[in-house]
Image (cartoon, rainbow, N blue to C red; front, side, top):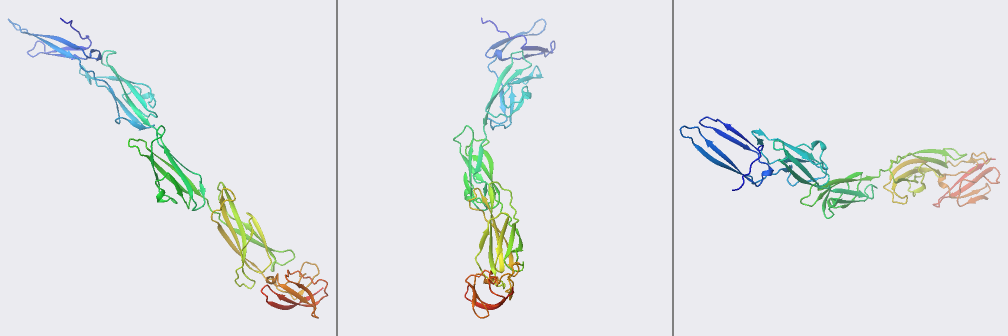
Length: 447
């Protein structure tokens, strides 16, 4: 006969109810622990009444077989948790044990192992929130507090897989361009540890971006104003988490120069301000925005647009200075002159093509010199030479005395005949201008 196996005395409790009554009852509460797994226990029961003269007796045997152990587990807030680095995940330690013992709620204790992303303040909690940055297995030991010491505990764990985030980058080698000029932007995306992953690209519509380039990793833009180009990159993997990223690139458009200048005029030494030659001073008052890797460029020019009589003419424009501060120009011939200052920004090397220029214009008037009928070559700097109309400068001039003898002749007169050694008196001149037209007159030389 097999030797009987006995349950430890602290595993079960027996309670007799209604003893000595017509309907007695007995309750046997058993708390099998993991040590009993796979074993069979027989519990003999004897039932006897107190009838007289005959007693009734019955025997029963309760067979208790411990066939299955219920193990603890950890339940995550999402099945098969795969998260982005640093994303919170809720974990709950769940014991599959009796929810009550001897009529009272069962009590359990929890001991989590320290792990990355698990706050130490939660190590004894049933529910925890973790924020892993790398794939981590979280382990917990669950202790039954109402069972025999050391007999009711279990361990469980869950693996939280972490995907590193997708990283998108975009850059341009032309962060500053002229308005409407091209800039190339190159974008890329990658996830650490997954070199084979592929991505799609989506640019947000923006100034200077062609719709045909909106889904390309390399684009060419032509902004007319400073513009930030925004990109969203998305993984093509079906099981990807944290599979997108955003980035942007700022392309600045060079600000044009606010071109401006002022004019001052003065007479050439010894001459009146009312007649040429006149010396003009032009002061640059342009405003230039502070922009790295740029150089302002200036070009001064003049164009005679009307003669001394105010009649419109169309002479060629003449450059005369590239000064960034002050430019001067002397005008010998009467008329109206259009003074132009053209300004532009050069990006990079000074020899580079400048951006679109801006322009400021001012008209100045040079009064005509009246042909005098007398001049006094006495060296006082006033009226020392025979002066003709400034428009006749560079014309052929012939001067005759009162007997008709030629005393002076030049093919390009510069208002510089002071009478030479001729005596005082009246002299006659004939002027032939550059068009071949002639005019005559007289002048008196006074000594």
